[in-house]
Image 1 (cartoon, rainbow, N blue to C red):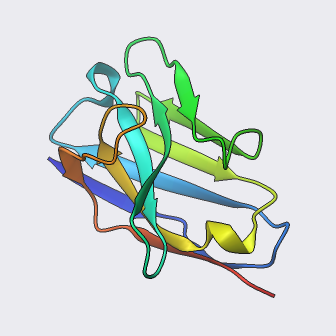
Image 2 (image 1 turned 90 degrees about the horizontal axis):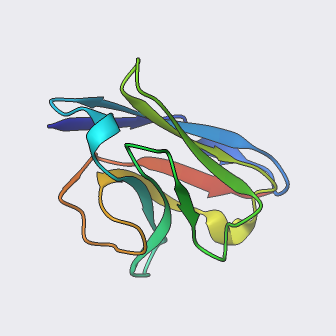
Length: 118
């Protein structure tokens, strides 16, 4: 299994980014895919998940209404659209095979850095 994240970068507060996670070795349609982040000096924080079968989505309260998780089964890719970014969203974002509300990751990528700063 390989998960490769992309799309991170430096953005000003209020800006947007879209993260992508390309999966190989597994079909995302049959598992929960999640985004988990880790800010400097802080513990892992679960951000969002999507159910593989029916695309039910789940969000942490801290990102609800600002972030949107989605998937493209044909491309075996998961996305995280992040809008109205805040400085507290600054973190290393991991794509993971992981259930909702959990930071336990069966598999994860190397992460993509998101920095929100003016």
